[in-house]
Amino acid sequence: MQTITVAIADTNAGRRKKLEQLLGGRPGIKVLGSVMNGSNMAAGSEPAAVHAIPIEDAVIKVNRLSPRILFIHLDPSGSESLTLIEALNRECPDTFIVVLTDESVQEERILQALANGARGYMSHEADSSYFLKAVRVVDDGEIWVPRRMLGLIMDKVCADISLWGRGSLDLAS
Amino acid sequence: MILLASSSQDDLYRWERGIYGLAPVSFSTDLAMLCDQLTKIKPDILLLDNDLPGLDGSEGIALLMRLSLETKFIILSHVVTDEIEWELFRIGVRGFCKIDVESGLLRAVVEAVRKGELWIRRSLSWRLLNELVTMTREQNQIRRTVSELLSNLTRREYEIATLVGNGESNKQIARRLSITERTVKAHLTEVFRKLEVADRLKLALIVKGSVSPRPTSQTEH
Image (cartoon, each protein chain N blue to C red):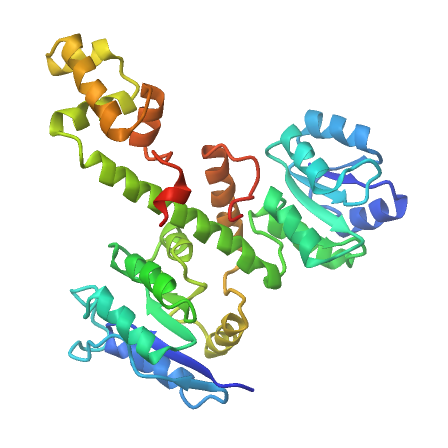
């Protein structure tokens, strides 16, 4: 089995440590360095600034680390994490993004994160077996999105098509 | 109401057993009957045999979908390939499975689709997400182009363009801004010139951000 490289972008050191510990040392998974700094923040406290480093720097850092999977903490509001996801999806196409959420994040916002290029999402609190499974599934080129959210994606795609007056889902070509 | 459509009595019997008790059930055994029932009953869910005689693949199914927009389509097929399945999701079906699906599983499919979930294989679901990503990228591109163009307008021109976008007539705009209709027209001529559009409908669509002032192929590079 080839090793899957993983990096974490979360300004909250506590949450980052937890995930690093969860994934570190698992067979077939290697946790690379962190993309965000922010160790000055106490574990559990919410960061005041959304990201500790500018988006351009984050892109450079991810390009240098070149992880296969990048976990990004999705803030419940503000445009920063969405812009970051969009930029990374464009600039680092070989890195697949999975966003981490908690109950404060609304469904519509998760949908936006996916629309901007995230390949999956899961709760910070998810069981470790889910994290391991998600890493492998996303590494395989599939997505980690539950059926319910897939239904919402379909609704959105179909609504946009009728709004835009297109006859079918035939967009990309 | 759940509508079951197949020319095979065996299929209908098995499907009915699978979904027993979920909702009242109705049957169609041919295409004409199916069209008729879709239009009249407008069922919540349709279980449809992909090989129903006369049904012309995904195009035929797309036509059926227009007969009852609120019906969620679940297609059951003898042949299962990524291409066939994806083609159906592209036209908006909500679920797909093998024609001889085990009845307990069929029940789970119907229940999931009824809740708004999508019954699609994981090996295909990335394609759906891809559609959303591509669409979002195009829209963002258009939005960027529009805001660039709108930034060339003077404040007054922008104000008038926005009012046109809200569907107001020149007369209404003149009254609202306490200027003459002739002045409104003069501003609009300038707006049309700057945005390279010929009429107020196109202008309205641009201001609303729903169309690109130029073909997307030109703006993307």
